[in-house]
Amino acid sequence: MRVSSFGRGVFVTITPYAVATLLCLLILVWALRLWEADLAVPFNHQSDSLLMQMWIKSLIDNGWYLHNSYVGAPAGLDMHDYPLDDNLHFALLKLIALVCGNWEQTYNAYFLLTFPLTTWTSLFVLRRVGVSFAPALLVSLLYTFLPYHYERIQHLFLASYYLIPLGVMILLWIYQDVPPLVVWDEQEQRCRWHLGSRRSLGSLVICLLIGSGGIYYAFFCCFFLLLTGAISAYRRRMLYPFWSATGLVLITGLSVAANLPPSLLYARDQGGKPGSRRTSPGRSRSVRTPNYAIVLSRDGSSRWPIRFFQGPVQRQSNPSIL
Image 1 (cartoon, one colour):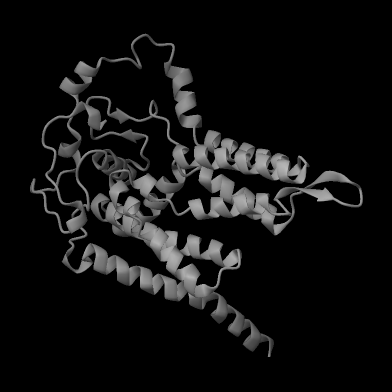
Image 2 (tube, helix red, strand yellow; image 1 turned 90 degrees about the vertical axis):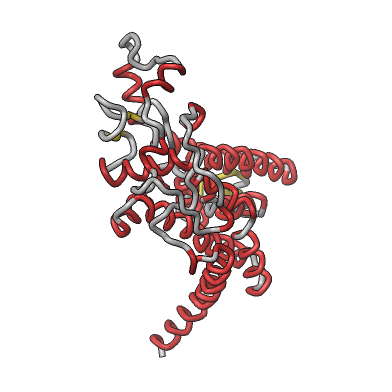
């Protein structure tokens, strides 16, 4: 009887996400006409996507994106002077690269993966706040297939906005009566820490992920955390929602900082050497290898299998690409 009840519980929990995944994939295949796509050709091959593709190739050829021995002769390309807090995305790309084995398929696979990930997180949040399955499914799919998702393919990490619904869930928790981290004790009439609750632990994990998923979304998450905390504190005439929000902002900031030691240590070691970190824009343009030459298809062609991303390959040397 226990096994049967457990099985029914698992089935009831998984079924909505399985249905949402199926619908998401069907819409994705139709919208991008994936039956015509060659996944060995990147979906986008211009502007800032070239830099992203170079990073992915660095992950595969050199182990991580911070150094690429195959460009920037004679010493190679070093990215320590370009601090990023996107290690969550780089880690996922690294895992995908272990399966795909080349940068083109890794780039395409991660972009496609962001669609079901966004559907899952948005559906999860909507169900957690009490929205019934049908409208929650509709809203999660609409949110997944926003035009922003396609338009930001050149900035793959911005197109990976699947953590935003989880951040919104934290905002709702802070605005409600039981925010994470800090609660009001009616008996003692004072605030007290409540770190062991599922809500607090979940919020900590979400903030750590957001802090490792890019500075843009981390910044706006912190901004709205403080705003929501202030509004909730004013509404209750108590400060504990604001302290909860402040604690989560601190956790997010620490997560961002935890991604930066390689760049900070490099700046400490190299900053004292005259000229080691300075060059003119003109010299950068004249001596660098154009990004398109690094990631261009082996035969030099530009094949565009998907209607959303059609456009000419930038074959000129454009200093703004870097």
